[in-house]
Image (cartoon, rainbow, N blue to C red):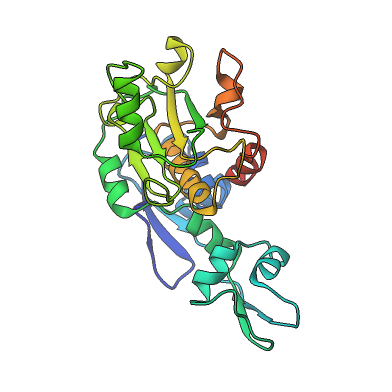
Length: 283
């Protein structure tokens, strides 16, 4: 996600203040404190930052890289679990073409927590560019609601066709965003729905009042039977980071379908890690 940050080799970075920014949201996004931003910029009043203002931000120093030597019986997933990182991160960070073929004595480089956070915060630049061109009225949205499709495969276009032809929904796709699982659309790919492009009410909740203020995100998959995959969760995390910042929403605005719907539902399924997702999101 393009944030206007220019980072060099020093311990500081420049940031251009955007609409709806506050010192709190900026500090949270860059893992610092409002006190530190105020100190670096000699700000007299924390509520007087302005759009276009250049702020100096502290950047975390790079920690000494940790390495691990593969021992008998090791597999990549257990190494990842022991170091609190994902198997996907270890694979990409070490450029492993055959992650299931570790040899005793191999050296595995462990990515830092900062590197993990960067991965989670990353949206495709082309997607961000498209999102940035969509005008959002101030205070238009109050919630971000997470759904699953309830199917093992699917796509935004297929859901749109179903909602138009079978459910006779005038605006088609009930959700504002769809995240693929590799079966019907690319794994982790975020599709922007017509409702978000035109800033129309959602059709994903059993309440017109809530649909008028709730952003709907649907992950392809049946999470009553299985878990969402890593790429889907990373895309959801990055998309929610973008939306909370763009719409000036707190983390508490993120809800599951079951938590907010006026009618009982199990969506997004018993295997969707809602508590873990919110804990990670707020870190």
